[in-house]
Amino acid sequence: MPAYHSKFDTELKVLPLGNTNMGKLPIRTNFKGPAPQTNQDDIIDEALTYFKPNIFFREFEIKGPADRTMIYLIFYITECLRKLQKSPNKIAGQKDLHALALSHLLPIPGENGFPLNSMYKAPQSKPDEDEMRAYLQQIRQEIGARLCDLAFPDPQDRPSKWWLCFARRRFMDKGLVGQGVNL
Image (cartoon, rainbow, N blue to C red; front, top):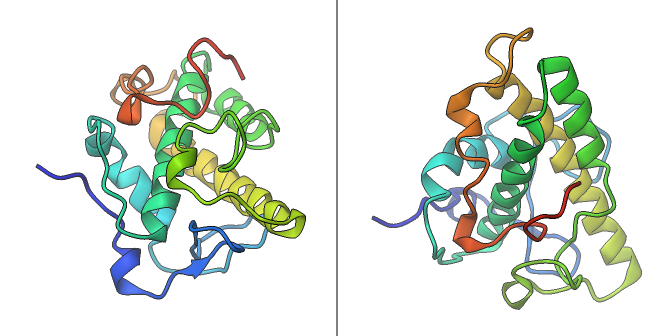
């Protein structure tokens, strides 16, 4: 069975993120940043929907820029779930994920610590790098907010075991940060 790919590569013209080969897709958000706005389903909805089946794959054929963005989001969701394991309730989880989204320790494509640099084109200039950082920070903030809504069915209780069971899994046997690194 093949992995689930992003429908945005075929349904709409994906803008490149600077001069990189990542897609700058519209998202539904209240966070400030360079992402175009939309009121429809977005790449974050798609990444959250396809996270559970895609996490089991060791290989992922990239079919376009939206797939590269989705791969980054899957890596980030895994880091979020690792962070949520220690959260006692939804409010603490939201604080933890907000701090994680703003962290400068998370590598972006082109940096030494990024796991799939061979598949991503690094930003060529400082403005492109700044735009990529701002876009990735904006989608990290939004995915953290939406993931908390999914992972905490009861705001006073611990996160759902049906989400946390994926915290130890590694997509394509890689992670956004190395094993043993705590953010």
